[in-house]
Image (cartoon, rainbow, N blue to C red; front, side, top):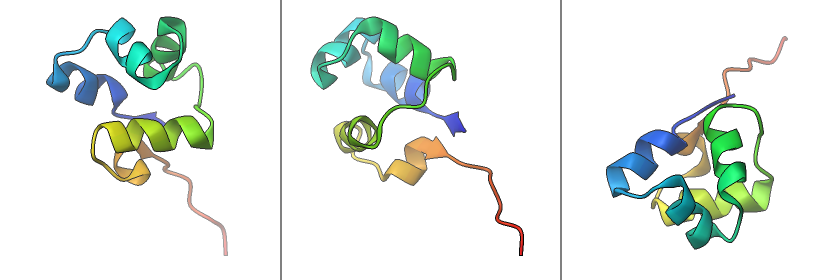
Length: 68
């Protein structure tokens, strides 16, 4: 899964620590999400999208295609 968290965080002028504080998670969690080492839970993904005024699918892009 591809994500655009770093892109939107940097556009907002926030450090990883600031984004973590706003979301109530650790800076390490933000780093792991940005480096694709951790897929956030649905509640966290929803909070992230809401914080950036986006839809979840705009912030997290899943390239999976179902087989017919």
